[in-house]
Length: 404
Image (cartoon, rainbow, N blue to C red; front, side, top):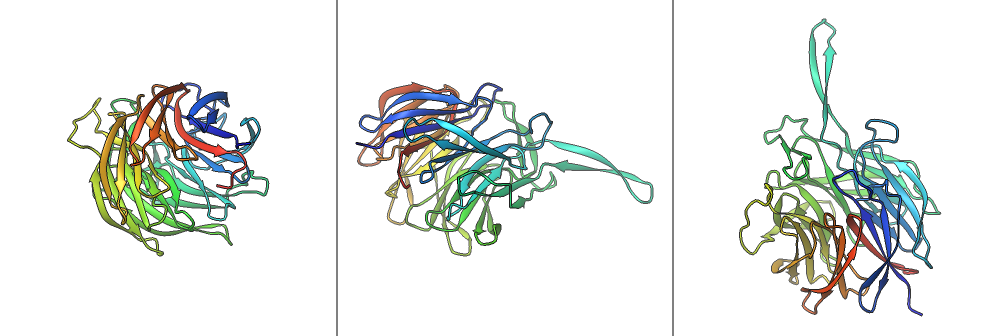
């Protein structure tokens, strides 16, 4: 009997509407979905992480406030996955310490959970009286951090055991700006505070990259698995100011890391070494031709995914609502080969099926999941299948009983 396959979807959105986590049955033969349930609509589950061996799902609750308080940060949560039904059961949660936990992944030994934070783009002005009786003021911003949590034997999350605070300029940098997103009315800080949007681990290595869209940086680190500590290695500042490095993906075999940008349709390609140093060796536009502003914003990227065969990379673009196919040569160098419509609005998360025959796109604003066939050359073909969803942001797939 074939294994049961489940699609798990984290829902996120700009508006204060129900979100939660949705589960679907997935048919491996034809790539069809059948809804199971949506739970915890109060959770803004912007990102998910799977431990397939333990059958545990980890999720962020991407909020800025503790329950019953103003401010205080969000949460990370653990759920057990029923292998027979695909239903989730909340096991526990921990406060994440910093506001807006935005991404999470496990350490190489799967004994720790690493969470990064986007933080809230607000400030407070405090009046200070000095010893001589004079007055001045100081401006304070949220601490942005990578936070390390131990994972217990049963898969639940323990209290945080280490924190790595990533610094900003406090608004005093040469490029510091405060802008308002013309579509969402969200405040966008340029090189004011650190805003970590993703943390990604290299396959089979104790090496991680955090994408800091607030400071236009990539930060590398490792986990001291004996002591339960985060060890910073290096950082790289991208050339393009306010490009907002968003997400990243490692090549499955080569020492290569790819990062996209929320505010620029550009793919950056880096080599990395054991010391954590990133070296930019290539970059390409994700557009076949120049595109102007859409709704007052430049075209930028959302999700990024490298095919397990190392020959193809996929990026989603907001504004155009396209999925971009990029071929990778033997050295990991990219070449733009295809744009295809996501058939939805704001393709925020993508995922390959376990057999790599289909790609699913979670289109957040239109509230649907579209299914694409992966052709032999890595390009995509729309199957015509579209499924209603809440506000899909992150998509993960699990073959029950797998050891992935």
